[in-house]
Length: 338
Ligand SMILES: [Zn+2]
Ligand SMILES: [Zn+2]
Image 1 (tube, rainbow, N blue to C red):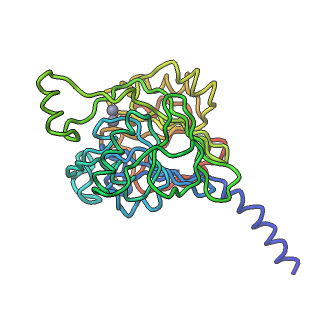
Image 2 (image 1 turned 135 degrees about the vertical axis):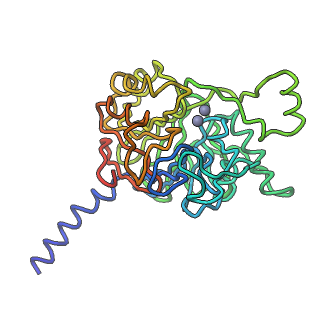
Image 3 (image 1 turned 90 degrees about the vertical axis):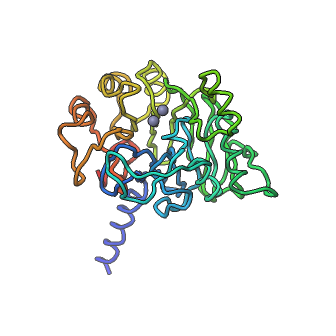
């Protein structure tokens, strides 16, 4: 009996700690690899709140079985590789450098929001676009998608709705009965927010083409997400190095895990080490959006830009390997799956 009691006490002591981790699962084109087009990631709070960060082009659509339950969908900006103007033809199809994708005329973001009855967390300007697309998916006669009635929701919500916040705005989501919610703050990203013309109506496409113009949906954004175990995640989206990384993300929000988008356009292959080591100073880093086939057989390829940057970064850094779940404690340390 004594042994049983001791074992039980040990379990009690051990399991709350286990349950206090945030689970992070990238959803990419090729299982076990970090590939060029990979964007989407699922975050699961210990209380059960599940969040999709940028649906992008590596989900097969709103019903991709790898998504599971999704309570909230975050949208950073309107570039096709984030809002999702293409979707994965099939998991593992095509190469890691160039996955096989097909058009998603309503965007994968709207597909997932509609399929999951999820909360869209983004700026009001971008929400307007997704509302329309979700309404198209639902068809005429359905109640139009609107902003959520409150900035503090219990998930799952009864019908898809969006966050009604802009830069600096805070939105909270909690599961039924949870004493604490997951908190989302919209932060700046130093980037661009032009929509892919393929997602616009024909008339709008023609107007833009006549003037060589692009349609912008307000500022592009990143997020700070505060989980209930104390983990504070900075989701950079596509961004150049900029001063808010120190003042807002590090000093004010005290982010302890940075999820950083790489790729050639915003220059973080060059400035990433400075941004991470000197400005953000997180406990850990996850790299995603690498725009190259960074791994082969799950191992980082030595002759990649991603490998070159990882050598320079002081904090422990990890790759967003598709369908591999990493677990982080409240201090930003990876405790499993890294
Ligand atoms: Zn972009
Ligand atoms: Zn991008």
